[in-house]
Amino acid sequence: MKKILFFLVALTLVLAVSACGRGNNNGNGEGNTSGGNNVSGGNVSGGNVSGNDGNAAADSRQDLASAMAQYGIEIVDIDGEPTYRFRETQNLRVGTWNRPATERNPSIANSQWADWIRAEVLRMHNIAVEFVEIPRWEPDEAETMAALLAANTAPDVSYTFVMSNVETFAEMGGIIDLMPIVDQYVDMVPNLYSLWGMDHFTWNLNLDTGQAWAFTAPHPDSNKRNSTFIREDWLAALNLAVPTTLDEFEAVLVAFRDNAQLLLGSDADQMVPYRLTEDVGWTGDLIFSSFFPNGITDRDWYVYGFDDRRFTMPGLKEGVRLLNRWYNMDLIWRDFPLHTGGDPRGSDLIRLGFVGAFSGGWDSPFREGDGLITQMQDNIGPEANFISIPPFPNEAGNRRQFVAHGTDRHIFFPRTNQNIPASMLYLDWLSRSSTREFLMFGPEGITHERTPEGAFRTFSGDEITDDRWTWQVARNYDLLFIMGHAVFLDDMEVAGLSLGLGFPGIEPWRVMQSVTNNLNYAHLMGRARIPTPQAQVDWGSPGLNRTARGALNRAVVASVAEFDAVFDAGMNEYLAAGGQQIIDARRAAWLAVYGDVDWIPRD
Image (tube, rainbow, N blue to C red):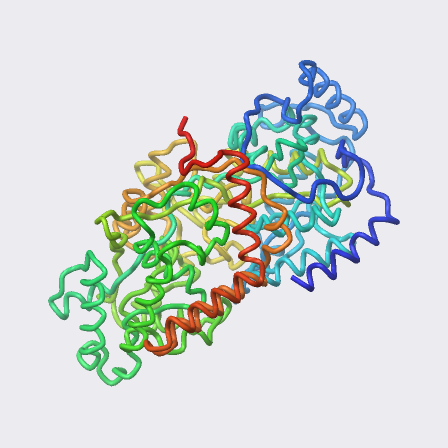
């Protein structure tokens, strides 16, 4: 966080002496404003979303006409549709995550996918797109973006998962208030409006100031989060039933440990009954969720739920205590704290066939780029496989997969963005049904084939002969950032069939089993429409997240006798580093908006 603030202090100095260029249309004065306080949603409709009077719709149309004249935009017929197109070519810089490079396709910005985007956007809108690669993971992502903002070189269209970063950028004056842009340009983006609805334009709207610093993209697959996967062939070899409770799961892990010689032969010393990762809050989530109180209220979920790894959630400590006990029983990978997200060692253990069970994203073992199952089968044999099991029941016997409210990445424009119409048209172009379909599946015969039912069967990497058409991430998640990582087609039946066929080398029923375990047990808490407290803007940061990670890692590997002291010390460190200020501020914010009640009224 100190690095971010350093860059952003520099940013304010740069902005104080630099022109902002045409098209910003922030409508609320220059420089710092409300500190980035946001609200999820708000009752808005049509183009009138900033507290304007009854003539706002007519004013917006007039503003749009003026902008079209200013930027030289005309409406022409392209592919049988009326299309907004610039008379003169416009330049637009677009951010995209640069995941660890693959040997066949080392740069997403230089891939065939990027070339196709550039050609199509130029053809349809006369916009020349340049991609700017940004690191995928925190804290590198935030620090890189802060540096680009400070240097006035940030991509015109940028995105992130971390809204607190956006709020920090806004507090320092680095990005544009988007609500006047929605007012003016909503009629220009019919495809985006159809995909999002007004709610995702205004998800971060501050009802007090009328400002929003980011659009929040929808996640059509928001009910799919995590799954626990277990070796099907090992269960069969030991004549064990699929575990359905934590006690049964522990018994299976013990059986894996005690039968390492039978299951792994000469590699018995490599046995990992349960693979945890350094990101304990993510890979331990389904275990932790089973310890959350069955009657947890909307108020508690709001007050303690600001950390996306749920570190301060009631009941989490007992979930960590269970992992600590398993670690001291040699049921958990001993070296998990030493290997961070970019280190392949944890995944290699799965590929080599040494892991009995693990938890992760609902599709994590199926992804071709990771190859957890397919490469394991190459190493072990076709019988080696994982199956998804349901979430573990809580103390009341209920299985819950706590999911989010259908949101994904936050899209923002830097203050140096000099062409708002081109930025909005690019988002609209991404939202077209034909664009989404192509970026998810690519050219027929090269990256996929159609089944008799019309579903898309995605080719495996071996079937794709042109390296530049291979994916860095399934369905081009990083290029198609106006929606979550989902198979989302106009024909939902085809979408469902395509989802099962979307993982080369994986039997579709295994994919759908994980989908079913997620959808059947998805549990959605009430959505609090409360402005983000300033304390969360000030204290919420990658640094606080790292503090939680370190505390969880130390607690899991502590001796059983020292667990309480180690966990409590880590929690106290987290609270002193800003966690307590955020909790107190969120508790006060709840009282200010909803009063002394525990539940949000349901519509």
